Image (tube, rainbow, N blue to C red; front, side):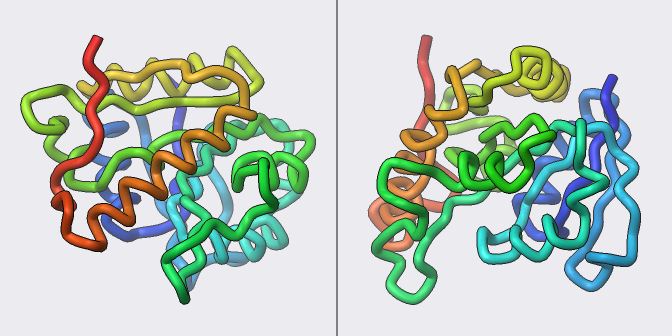
Length: 192
């Protein structure tokens, strides 16, 4: 089983930790105040931070991230307007991170789920499903196996370029919740 370092201590970071730990993975966190001071110990690094924090993490840890699986969970929202994504048109946060970390294996995952649905393992009556996009099959397999071991479903959503669609879906879900059209304990479910 892979070990994980999660950047962040918020709701999403804690919910992801719960899933991974339930599956037997070793998990440690690097909080905001520890960035640049604490070392990465995990084989897989999860960026459970707001998108604007990613640049600072990469600046501090770029060399430590070489060869690692890096999981981007961000939804690159404009936090001032909450009405647009801040990445170039046609791109995604994950693709932009991969450009900054060409020797890492970047995955997009967890951005289409809320912390509550990860923590409970349910979206309505359905098991929570984590969609995983990336260009490295082995990296995707590591994360998918860890998520399934933690009791959730996981689906290979294709190449990293699919992160564009995952971020659009995440953005839609966030705007629906922020406008109180759906609850923060709900969201989109995948039914097979």
